Length: 462
Image (cartoon, rainbow, N blue to C red):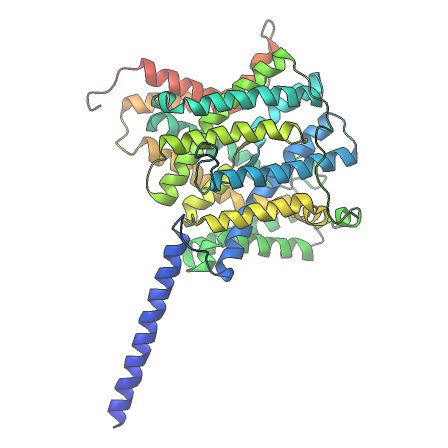
């Protein structure tokens, strides 16, 4: 009798374990299906918040930088930050839920105000003013729309070796950003200080351990939990400043339409248009990384077209409310390639949180209290994944001497020019050359990779 009872108990436990495994597999299937049902709240919230936390510094910082260059007041700077958050939410929602089957990729993508344009925006703002930036932004937006419309025919210029090179260069170009965050953020009085590095390393360590040794939601939400630990550590060390919260009194605040003047200066329009073209190439790379890393396929022509058109449409709309140019966020693409969570409800909640942050000043101010060392410690591994995704692309069908030449020369020129200050600003060199080609390694690498791929003879294997 005792043996029968033991056998029955063992059988019941085995069935329960089997059911638990099936439930875990079912839940995982929901997370890895773009059109799947809404995940459980315990999974949905941390997975969505980690996308918000990974993007938020990139959303608000360009507005802060440009506002400073253009000499805006604190109130005007706040308006630009709110516009950045709101337009990031709008762009992301369009990517998730395409309009007219043309505007939006229908992919799990976070898109919004981007660092990629900052060097050019700084140059335009310093030479002209904020109104000139918004005028050039409208022209650049239309260029992006045209690029998206004809991407089906242009796409042949971007085979795996070219797109992989661009993605690899994007990853490399983001490493200094992560390190600057880890050190406390450029311009910070404590930049490079011991406290910043302690917080950054603790954050990185938690993310690394959870991503490589944990299972379930702890693994999938490794960035979120790492940033929570990093934030609490920074709080205990007195590194979190809540002063911004006390300065905000309004409960809800809407962006003001056409508050800022719009001007069209040809030189500025041409400079920013070139950057838009290059960032459209970057968007191709990011969308490709998203589908390859999270869905095991390449994006369709319609998905690429809709994604790039959205980039242009939202940039045009943003110029009327004080927002800056938009692009896909490579750090969030990296999260997708790491945890392979593509359920659109995860990204929908992320967009709604960003929208709320833009409409509710208190919440917006709270997001700005996250120390940059926490962001850096959490995202450096993400940037590494982006670079490795690029390598995976251009080595997918082998790595011959032709690919070696394209990748090596393109990355060398792109990275080399941007690392040598003033290399394109000597006597007789037009100022716009340095503005367009000397500010981003992605620009030079992308153009050179395209040219080399066209002129170098195909290998016998091809």
